[in-house]
Length: 274
Image (cartoon, rainbow, N blue to C red):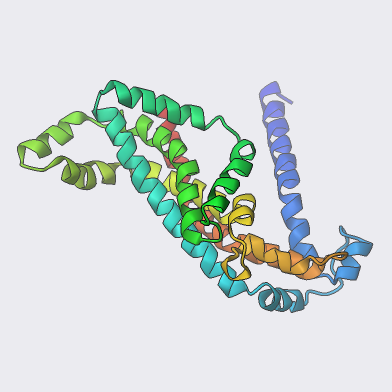
């Protein structure tokens, strides 16, 4: 067997092994969502005895799925839209206006990305708690903006540098103002990086558990990940409906990623080139 063909077979084999290892946890969650809690405890890796959807019905009712879905949807949609809007405008400002203060602010944003959230979460929650601002979806969206905009600015900054300034000069000659030029000329050109950032932030905000658990205190404000509290009691965990709840939580964001995956790959590739 030629060495080149052997190398290709070896690469493909390793790739499929990696794929199976990556998918195995998801497959176990799906299979266990059809088991009773007792069957799950006895053998978590066994095949389900029957594919009954009773766990999904129980999970839908017990975790108040629709309320959690609406809360997650509102927080995710507004959080992502505001992050994209402010990141794009800030990135444009940093690229097109060569002020010294812009360089300082840009590097401060990059430095902020290196600070782990766990380092600041306790003082952050204490500060907002003392101000009486916890248990608010608006405050949570504001926090997501603070944590998400530095990465967005970094991505837009690199992308906007590759856009020809002559396009904007032509619009200025035609009488366009700077804001109109940004929204009508520059912003449409940022579509690949907007889609990439949107998918990354949707995955982050939709699945986030830690920050909402610190901010959203009342059951009516809980997002879908927080709604899984319903399956935990003091001494026991209802594993069957819990697995079904996890599957239902994953499905919306998985559908979004499948729809936009081509744009994500294109955006990352173009961003890397620029």
